[in-house]
Length: 107
Image (cartoon, rainbow, N blue to C red; front, side, top):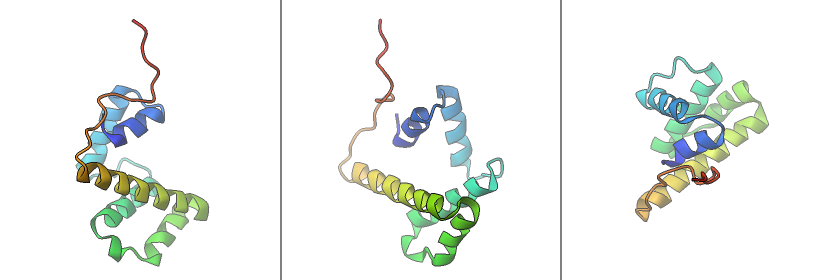
């Protein structure tokens, strides 16, 4: 299971909801998401592709939708996820096949 999918599962989405959410996110058409989430996705994409181009105005856009503290959460989580992706890619770490936080099923 990929890191993003695992975080969505930890947040409580079932397997079908995770698949649907990742499909919608990957499509690049985020119009079905709330405006604040669209702003967070755009910020994270910009930060991933051109981190040097992130400006104070980009952060203030997040503040507009989330408030200062939650905007910092968006930035922190985006940074963490970008970092984890780069570390996993650099070391060719395999992704988990299942949600490692889910209790083991008894047989």
